[in-house]
Image 1 (cartoon, rainbow, N blue to C red):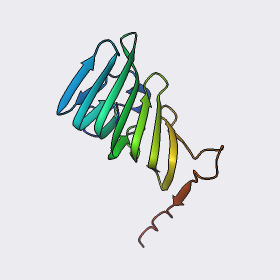
Image 2 (tube, helix red, strand yellow):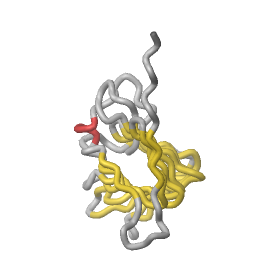
Image 3 (cartoon, rainbow, N blue to C red):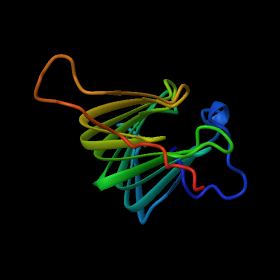
Image 4 (cartoon, rainbow, N blue to C red):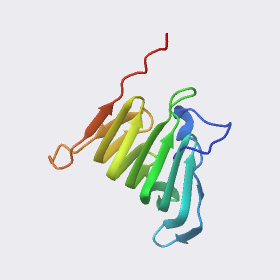
Length: 158
């Protein structure tokens, strides 16, 4: 589902959504009636170059396919390699929602995303996994402000 321990077979961003989602955890339960599976304890979810580490993961199924994955942690951690040789995109949040069919990751509550020399902080951040586009904040309220920090490039040594 989200990136990190991918070893030598890291996949480029374009193929992440075509990869299976692998989940490792201390416990797992599946409720067939509710079409929900719950994983707890040091949960590691991987899909291609995408990796999420969380305390708990709840997977909601529709017609047998993972429709929505909700992960929580203190905080949960996200990482993705956008393409070979590119710097990883990393993020943290108390709550995250991943929509595999939409290639959309939503980070909520004390969320941070680091992309290149920029750091985005807000209580609501959307990350489009296909385009590596970060959208932060909520236009409907001034209480969900965004803080962006842009680091200067390191000067070349002479």
